[in-house]
Amino acid sequence: MNEWLIAATVLAFALIPCAAVSLLAAPPHGLAALEIAGVLVSTIMMLLSEGFHRQPFIDLAVVLALMALVGSLTFARLMERHL
Amino acid sequence: MSWRHVVATVLLVAGGGIEVLAVLGLCTMRDVYDRLHYVGLAGFGALLIAAGIVFRESFSLIGDKALLVGVALVLSGPVLVHTTMRSMLIRERGDWREGIEQAAEDDER
Image (cartoon, rainbow over all chains, first blue to last red; front, side):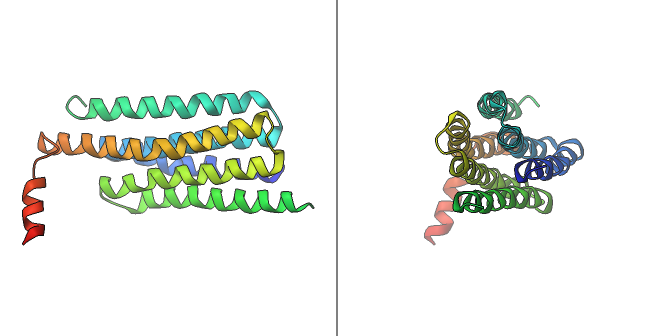
């Protein structure tokens, strides 16, 4: 296990508090947690790609970074009045 | 151990530390507006880790795309925070401008 995979594991554990805030707190707080979780998961994909030297994972990180932005913006817009 | 490896490891630790700090901030703050500050911080952690990958790999396919992800996360952070805060203000007050003029008058006094 190299240092990149260790960092990916640490950041994977950091997702647990984000999930807890999303599940237990009010929806606006959950959106903030979701936004941070999107950054964390994109970073984890980058770290896995470097740790395993597998190029497809970095493509996932690129797509996920963009989709996390679009998803969070959509939730923010919906949360104005509907959620 | 080459100097590139050392620099990459330092950047990795710094970036990971910033991301963990962002999660700790999310957990310790109680107000949603305080919590949103840490979204931008997490993006900078991702950029540092991407810089670490570039230092180790140089400008390879993985290095280039890691840098792209890091820059995208740093740039998207303020956009996300601004949009989310605006939405929260509309949710609470009906209009995000409400109260701004009063606050400006208070500042002038």
